[in-house]
Image (cartoon, rainbow, N blue to C red; front, side):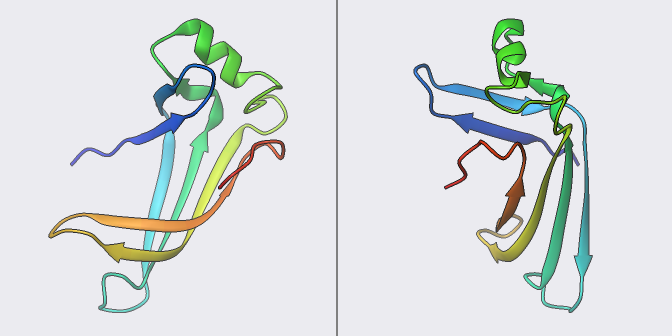
Length: 102
């Protein structure tokens, strides 16, 4: 199996990309597959938009600020099955303090 962490960002020009290095764990506390905790740790400096200029801008202090906050973390609070083999997770995302998270 292969997994990716993809993002879409609204800016003056829409930006999409992935992160190349990350670790994730799933902790099941029940036989119910939706009773699970998903923890993800993303190496912020591995942001990849396929544009060196965009990557450098995102890594800088106006966006992710990888020097100050090298890890982006996510911890789920709820997991919902959306298909036979797909799930959606909601939870808490932590990265540089100045980024708004809807």
